[in-house]
Image (cartoon, rainbow, N blue to C red; front, side):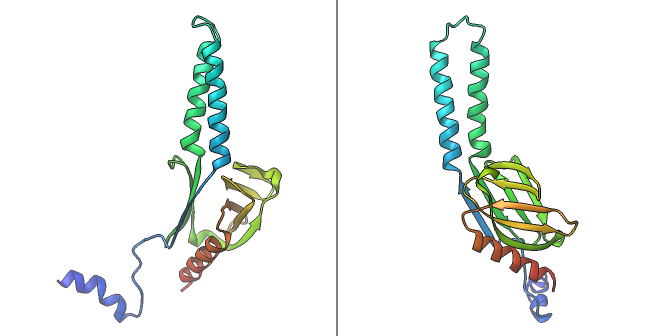
Length: 172
């Protein structure tokens, strides 16, 4: 009981709210064009494989290509962005490829519009890095060290609001 009181009542007595690292924002955007493109490539390669002679020297290459495209779907088929008390995290697909930016390392966040030729995926652009799975809308985070990181999203207003809100809470 004493532990409960210490953990729950003392912060209220100090006029502070409890934060348990629960995401204040979390959204997954599916990259349907990416998924459809990868599956179409997989089907074309698969159709090619059925036409090859089983003893063909190109058959292992075709099978390896099919395995690669099949692996790319869960790796790059979606982009999940979360904002919690400590950081903004952007992770592709199952989460092997991710970027975590600490709130304390951020200077500003603002909505941005990507140029069509920036493309999708992971990009190093003239302003910094970009993670994008679909569309042109994004939120650009300016870092304390001067760099920038852009996160593509179909919810730019909500993501920007969550980041700014978290940044303002970190200042207090």
